[in-house]
Amino acid sequence: AQTVTQSQPEMSVQEAETVTLSCTYDTSENNYYLFWYKQPPSRQMILVIRQEAYKQQNATENRFSVNFQKAAKSFSLKISDSQLGDTAMYFCAFIFNTNAGKSTFGDGTTLTVKP
Amino acid sequence: DAGITQSPRHKVTETGTPVTLRCHQTENHRYMYWYRQDPGHGLRLIHYSYGVKDTDKGEVSDGYSVSRSKTEDFLLTLESATSSQTSVYFCAIWGGRDEQFFGPGTRLTVL
Image (cartoon, rainbow over the protein chains, first blue to last red):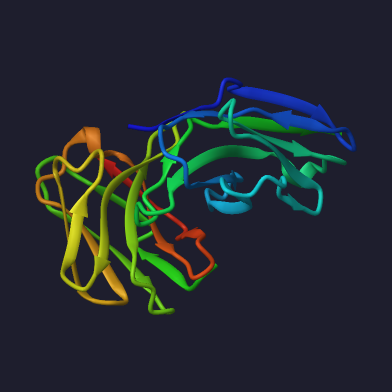
């Protein structure tokens, strides 16, 4: 079974600074997806960014980018120019591409952006 | 939001009573899922469906059953609720761009 580990339960960053959230996973599969989700106090799960394992290029979405290291099974999220609205819990998730979308989630990192 | 709604959004019930949560989607997606989220943890898969009347178990399925009689509706039933089932329940769909989208969640409290 695959596992996802987020080793930083809590992090904080000053507004406008850059922060990196870490995620590692364990799998013997070769084809899969990795996701970062944001969960603000409203509880809504919001997709932040997605990475396909077969793509070597790191995904980017505006201020959000990932550092995907397949051999090391590492998938970190970098948030640039942090904003107060980025305060939330962030979850890393793993899905086999043939696993009908069944996700395995990490336990989350609570990020606080300070003014 | 991928057209996913959940009802009810909040429910308080007593131990031993049956509870049914409903997930409704408007975009005809084939795959639907039920997850639970407990404090300090990520989401864990309870059951999922890959079509009308086609369902399968996830990692924490004990005490739960599901049904899908129409493409748009996926029901989660707790036959006899227990305090350990107090949680936030999320429904999700697998979208056309290989992305998973979630409903707004249902907070269930079992006293």
